[in-house]
Image 1 (cartoon, helix red, strand yellow):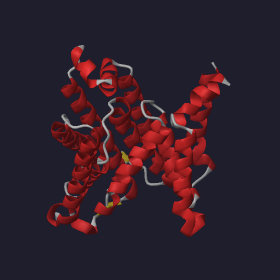
Image 2 (cartoon, rainbow, N blue to C red):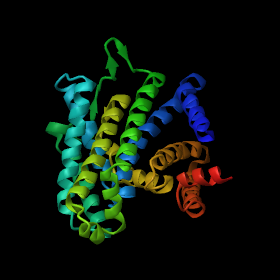
Image 3 (tube, rainbow, N blue to C red):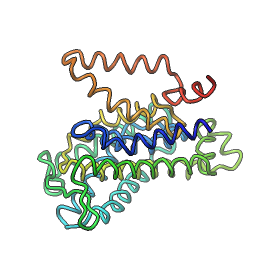
Length: 306
């Protein structure tokens, strides 16, 4: 019963946030929710599937560029471009999963790292298609009829809706047969094969679905910012998404969301330290890793016991 009241309070605060603040704070909140969508999808691959990826900025960029190009060059609406962005990103995840099926550990990390860099180089140099380093501007905002999500407050509710859907889908998958198969592959792949789990299908499913989440987040980001360029989808973004999952709590539904919110807000809170910003940022992440080995999600059962 107390948990229900707690979640109800969190929901009321989240819905009321645009009424309590505005401007840059809401922009950071919107950005945090977009990264949370990436982290929730990546958690299906890393937390439940045990497959580490440092190339999810590529799927993020593919989704953003697909949506931006279709809307700017072809005149599509966001709602038509969004499924295309998810489909193209999911196809890229499927293709990446094929050569990565037999790889583990640092070999898998190197493959995903290489894939992310290949996509970034393509976005940087294929000027005839991606506009190269100049990027794509004039991306229209999301709209429903005559109602456009042009302000940070309006976009907040759109991003929150997508995040809620992403959490619901991840929760459903985690408690389904596919989720149990993912966890069996993570815990012992050989044993999973012996009991009849198709590990090839499970890994491809995880790679594809996590890429779809990143593609959706990329589409949202493109229409929120109105401009994208290859510099926005670098290796640092992939590492940040992975850290969000690991510090939030891999293998939990709400842990990656907490990790995304904290790691997006933390840099903004430390801006006033200027030259010492990165130092305090690194110390903060280190303290979280040391004192919360189960991630931020580990605070939930501890609080419940108290």
